Image 1: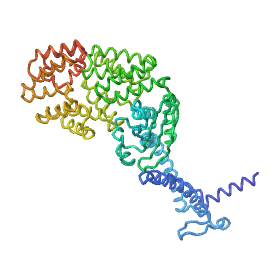
Image 2 (image 1 turned 180 degrees about the vertical axis):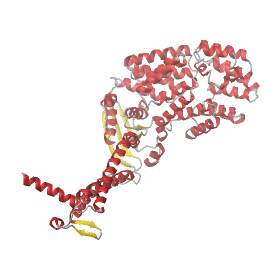
Image 3 (image 1 turned 45 degrees about the vertical axis):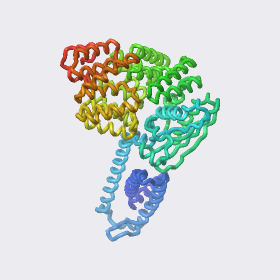
Length: 595
């Protein structure tokens, strides 16, 4: 036993004498630096995935060679010499040379370097790995081609695209582009690298859907955008009643291919069925398809399908939420009277939350009612925050909450919310337009003009963008350009845009043409006999004309009917001339807006 211990000790001493021990930390530090460097430059230089493994193998081979060389040879002042046997060394006095001290210093420095690099690496990855990994797993679902042979299923391509996007949104490891950003690529001839660059994503999911009777087939393929490499392609055949399982399979397959580890909560959310009735689900998809077209007629069609979905499944929470959102939208833009629509929206949102209180859309719908009809500002803010907590990537929640903040003159917070929405979906038309609108409200007219022009460059027909740009030009005293933009908005709506018509009348008055202003005022009075015209519209024109008594009369009417446009009493430029009047401030108090 003693012999063995002596041999081990002697071997260890020999390793130290030949400086093998000293070379190990030095080599390890250098190898660590090399691996880190390769890891950093691999992606920018588009090196193959196996590069790091090859470098690791070479470093391991080099390590063995360096140990052998350090055992056989020694570095001396006279150059490289073969290490002398231990017996020869015994005849010489023990040296504590500078060379030995140097090796010790090198060893200690190497250990410090390794510890330092490891520490930096750990902390760097703690702070950045989640963000980098998410960016690397950025994905856009391109519009699925609809290959169905019946007009009854015209909605399926866009609807399935939207649903798969919603499934991928539930995976926190992914950065997913929203539907509004990707719809511009419907029927596009652009190649994958260009689309990936424009959307700033690394992966694209594309495919098609085909339904024939009860049969459905979905084809999906995942593409690495920068290289146009097809990672996988799968066909999911089945029956329509299996549509939920198919959508879940697509989401899970994408997660697996991009090496995303799903948490139990994410799996639960993805696998959660909104309804057991597949035909009710089809009707809901139709409703959303029409609702997303953002015209009065299409929203009304969407409402019809939401109602049919509810009839087929009275416990379909998402259908209730969709119907509530539709009522809110039509009421806000004056198509429905507030006293008729908002109470129904509230009832529908509460019904949805009673069935499932985790639906962010229902919380948003309820928040909208509390702000624009009930003037319950604290309650509204709580509902917006609940929606965002439930679904942090819900762009609509951030967007509408931002508008809520503008009504309170909390512009910095509003811009933060819009920035958050834009970070989720940089090409979202509504969010880009809203940012321009916010700059207008904040009286930063140059920024507002730039942002609204940017939105029009993305889509020159996008609703209300020309109208807001017209108001910006009006504030910059560019009357001709203001009237031109407002007329463009009216023309796009084929003359049925009541708010753009009102703003044009306001612009005429501010620019000194009261006669045209009165003509539009009379036109609005005629239209009010046929359809709902918010009383606020009339107040704007009368205040511009300097007829404040009539203006306040219409404000009182707006107060009585809970006109949603009255909520911008603090932020709307049209009220600048009356802010010092007692009646204005008293109205703010009645609306709980005086804080």
